[in-house]
Length: 201
Image (cartoon, rainbow, N blue to C red; front, side, top):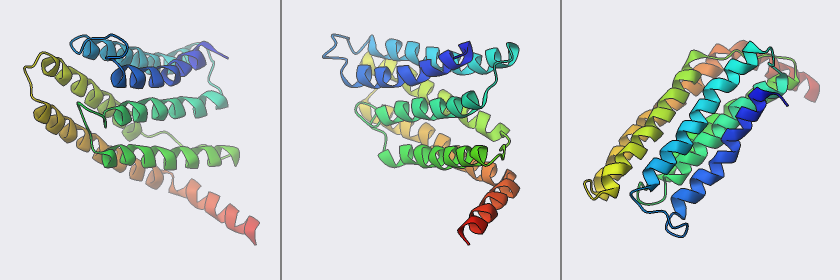
């Protein structure tokens, strides 16, 4: 276990905490006005861990095959968990939008893992990094919008509508980045499918 991998595990650890605090803040004795700031803190810690795990892995020459698989998996678990949490009031996102993130990440992660086991290294794409930034920005926007809502300065309907718009944009780009990833690595995918076919014959 390297420092980079410990930072990666932070995102996995924070995911259920974020969800639990959002859903059970009243039971925990947290006021609605404090809730957005607490969630912003957890979001900030998660995003910083995402930024620094790769930095430390490269700086201290700790890049491993395990880390290459764990890092995107942790990103997917963390970000899907955040948006899945937002399907509950007061944000109340449509579940369909979250499934776009879930299906996209599931397909890409499965493909990347299978190819890694077969000795094919799928190249990362800048669209994937942009997708992560857009998703982080969308979650940040929603939490910031929760601040005036908690102060009764913003209605629940406006909070929900604005959240749906930014999440829909993020979902659309996530879908595009998935298609771009598969198309850019189509030669590897073709080799994988050809190898599967040959083994099945």
